[in-house]
Amino acid sequence: MRNVAALLRREMNAYFASVLGYVVLVFFLLVMGVTFAVILNYLTRGPTQMTAMRIMFSMFWLPSLVVVPMITMRLLAEEKRSGTIEMLMTAPVREIEVVVAKWLGAVVLYSLMWGLTGAYVLVLRKFTGGTASLDLGPVASGYVGVLLIGQFLIAIGVLTSSLTKNQVAAGVMSFAFVFAFLLVLNWMDYLFQGGAISKLIKSLSAFEQMEDFARGIVDARTVLLYLSATVWTLFVTTRVVESRKWR
Image (cartoon, rainbow, N blue to C red; front, side, top):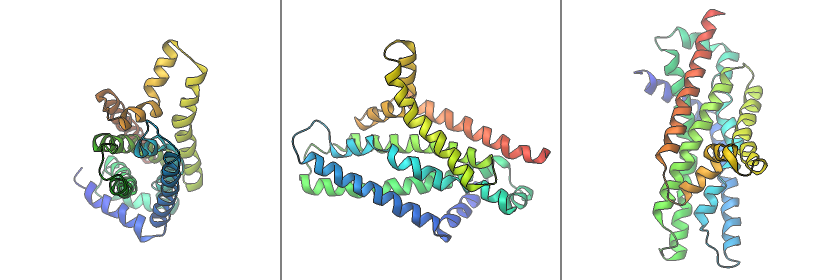
């Protein structure tokens, strides 16, 4: 994996050498800024057990539906369309290194986006006077949850990008998978109330897991689930990329 660092620099340059990285960044900050303002307006209407950051973390799915497809759709699809994937594969790098570097590049950009929302924490501390209503423990675990779920969704996006030469098709497939995992799975919980199926759905629901993270609960089983799913997804993506050798 010695070439991953060099490939990662290539990916980050690709994001910020074009307008894509800036457009996605501005879009994300705009959506989260409006969401944060709405949350604060809601909290000023009366007492509630929810905190601003906990509500914001519960809205993690909103930008993910658009941001994840946007930052992953070009990763391998564009390489195939332009033919640069052939040159990349003939370089002294392995397929797994290419896949991991592209995934890491998207994860770094995604982490940067959410990192900038840390400014909201500073705003809250200033206007609450640093009171106990802003417990930094749940805030930190909330960010862990957002990034843990996000990096898995990005792995899904990299996989869909490896399946086609068309960026738009890759983006649509990524959106469909993210939509199904985040929202359809959550809606299914209302269809199966009680029983083993309901328990299974709850254990896989990102909303249920994010609720725990936002309350300061970091379950090792959830962490292992997402890391294992990410490794498996990247493995499948690598196999897809390797299959080009036999065509």
